[in-house]
Length: 71
Image (cartoon, rainbow, N blue to C red; front, side, top):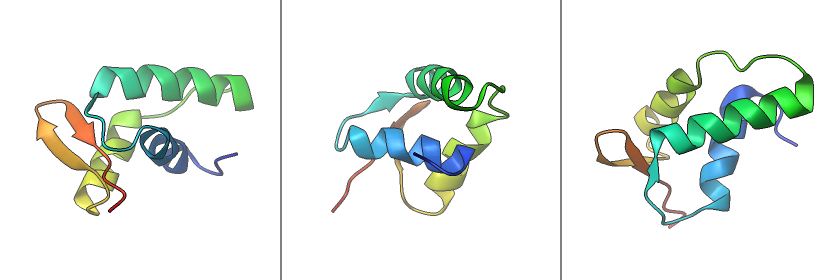
């Protein structure tokens, strides 16, 4: 189980490597999963996606579309 909201975002990308994923798909999954696991609302999933992109873990392939490449 992910320990933080940002970890949960990266977990989704790791489960779907090398697949361009629209921003909305990640946000919808993460907010539903966080609420299911913790019973609280996910705060600012956009920030978590931007963080992983800025740290170099995600590639931005188009506006609002990110990709995780494990290599």
